[in-house]
Amino acid sequence: SQQGEEDPQALSIQEGENATMNCSYKTSINNLQWYRQNSGRGLVHLILIRSNEREKHSGRLRVTLDTSKKSSSLLITASRAADTASYFCATDQAGTALIFGKGTTLSVSS
Amino acid sequence: ETGVTQSPTHLIKTRGQQVTLRCSSQSGHNTVSWYQQALGQGPQFIFQYYREEENGRGNFPPRFSGLQFPNYSSELNVNALELDDSALYLCASSLEGGADTEAFFGQGTRLTVV
Image (tube, rainbow over all chains, first blue to last red; front, side):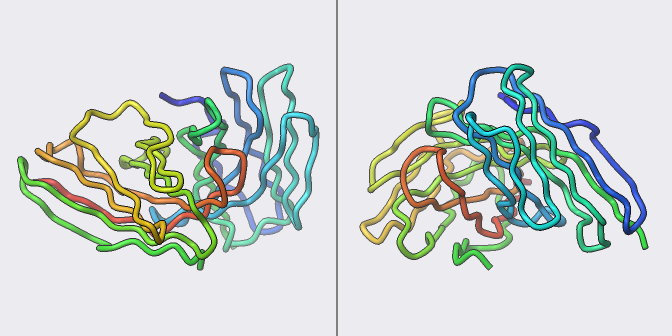
């Protein structure tokens, strides 16, 4: 079952622009993670935010978490062509599994 | 590179056959989780092994089984393959059991069932 749902499903922007992706989930969580996947290969961990945190930064990435709305957002600033990938949010469920959404496909053109 | 390696990278099997996929975890990690990713979908949790014991299972039938060895590498076995089993199979290793820490993924095994 899908716990997280990303929005939009697809996003096309120009290099240098900012990209924002949103994730909504259904049940209470301990943490939420964002991953990137290039061309159907393995996933790369981007950032983990815990339920008692509201915002976290890592380089050009900014993640926010609103547990009252059960939602999170991932902001990529000053996008580059190399940021072209699918982005997934994942939440923990029963403390064991990462439950992923269907992802947002980001395309950054130069 | 995450240090998590999967083999083989690609595989073609016939419906009804059995398949074994392998995963070596990152050094120092005692937990391996397996995921199935169909085309255009997010990864779906199959099961997790922590210190050689199954530590949680997703909504997959018993013909999906696994094993973790003393060196924490792992196998995923699928019996009686069906066409819908065609997918990218991902393994992820992490420091401890559960889903509270970063997971390091391998590059996946692309399984095609014909």
